[in-house]
Length: 99
Image (tube, rainbow, N blue to C red; front, side, top):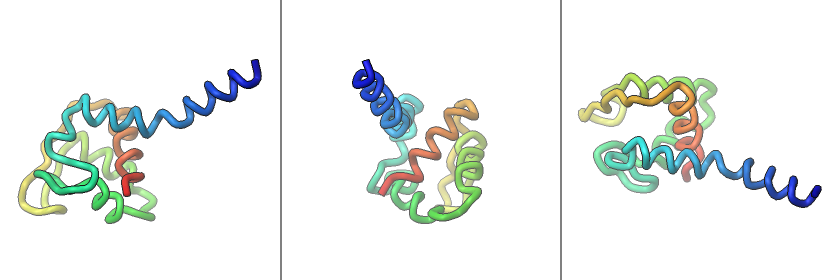
């Protein structure tokens, strides 16, 4: 029973990053972004590098996902996205881990 509990906890701990990538697919984020290469918007690895070590990065990027933005990565604006606060935070937390 303890072994089963340990496995369940390990899988649960590992799933937020995977769940966030899946969420990015579900919310159509990958139409404009990719992990390693620029498409319309910047590559997620570039976003992670730019915001590395910034304490307010999760909150700032989550807001940008929800409200949209422009000017940081060029002239093409990012539209607002219909995601909840929790989804925006999950997406941002995952993006900041991409290398």
